[in-house]
Length: 129
Image (tube, rainbow, N blue to C red; front, side, top):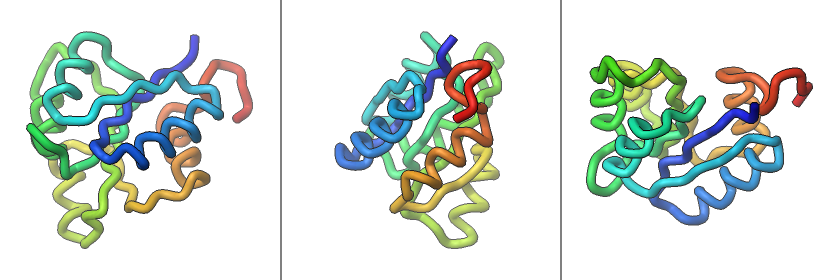
């Protein structure tokens, strides 16, 4: 079964780049543009991994992570903060809010593939990507 990545990003260019890189690697890629939609989607159909912008409209990424991690019905999936907030305190705040990793923007395609592969492995069982 193909693994699913949810991209939570309000910038269309970033969404398109992330989508192309990950779909080319074989992942099923879904997209939402704000924090409230991210929570709704995750509770309805949890992805295998979430790429989460921290500066989102309607509900900030930090709060998205806190709410999902506090929900006992939500499975423990890897959440990677992808953000222009790159100071040491920003990275620490992302990790303390419940993110599993932090990647600075702009994110190079090879770094994106490496991060996703490290957290959930190849898109399909048995593939070598």
